[in-house]
Length: 355
Image (cartoon, rainbow, N blue to C red; front, side):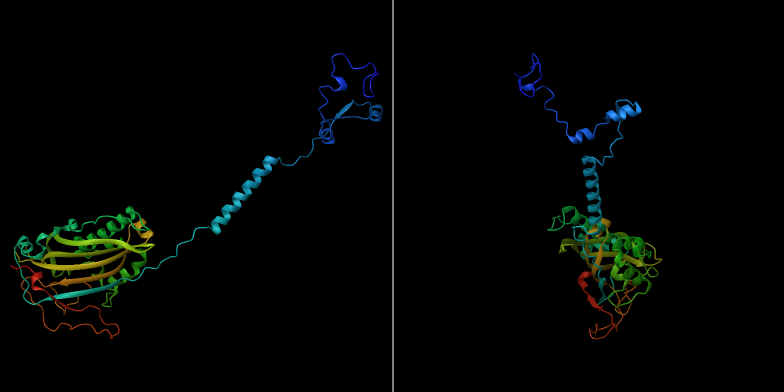
């Protein structure tokens, strides 16, 4: 006799014992039934309307799928993070450093005797301490490059190269020396120093801040011309860290120029004029990227000059056969407000040609 759940005729042949079949694992729960697209009419509905046995149910209003919801959430998080990073990023913004004004000193060197001259510039150079100097930019040699704690090899090279370019443009370019040009020098300066640079040429002053000859070498073209464009140069460049954000390059070079009076022909006697420039450059990372420099200190000694001549705006060298006039300034009073910072020195006899 079969059990309560068995068919009256017993278990069909070939069916598994206990009445289990292949559909027994399917569970038609309430959610499955409610999700069905077809719904059977009740017997009363079929009798009243003679409708088909089933009807199509309207689709359920389903929300976003789980994957779509996660995607929307991720986009919202990314967008919010981008806004947050734009307003408050974790990297510390470097403080903007204002450029220090250039501090400059220009010291004229007066000769004790008449200035030696010669019709041959080669003879002048050969009989002077500049005999072994190189000519032009070749005399500004680059040192061995070593990276620092906070600057790479390439950054140190950039600083040294920019300093050399400044020396070339401000000490060797004929358009600057006798033509009155300033742009070749100006474009190499940190933009924060341009106001001081422009004021130095618009309103020169012997105040240690606004002397054109502190920025560049410039002769009075109404009195002096180059007798030889092959200017002799010798000096050194040294690079080191000023601080973690600044490289410093110190340049110490002596430039020797052969000069004649303006309008004189090649047979007129020429003489030598010596300028020693000690310049201190500073570079932050913006300067390195823009190939520009901040000129911090300029110390210049130049001669033969007369102490009584103004060497602030232009250099007016004593030429062959000329002597310094007496009555030059004895020095600078450190307590006198607004007085010139430059004093007058003596040009050593050994610094001039022996011709």
